Length: 122
Image 1 (cartoon, rainbow, N blue to C red):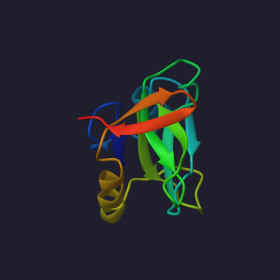
Image 2: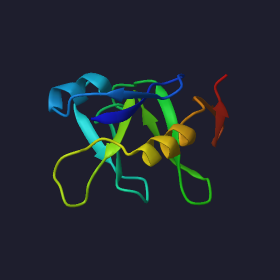
Image 3: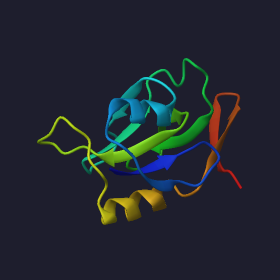
Image 4: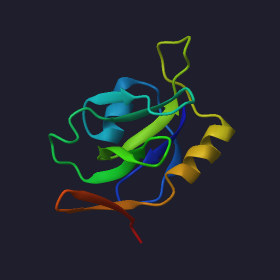
């Protein structure tokens, strides 16, 4: 299935992966967790224990007005999560375009006092 893999401090890349659990776990480096932060039927698959394992911070998730509400730790990938299926599927061309643009800029995170700053990683 065609997915977008997003690693910390790197640009996203499109990859074809097997849809079995072992292949998905290999990408994220452990047990997988599916998160559904988008309006589209797209799942963000990350390491279930990424924050507990202190994996590197990767990308911020933002609400509709741009406020950061969570940060994904470690490598994650995006795939389609069809509402009528219990399996993940490959991304469409339009989804690839949309999410490659959305996650194009690697980010770094700076905690100053009680403020969190999300900066482009150049």
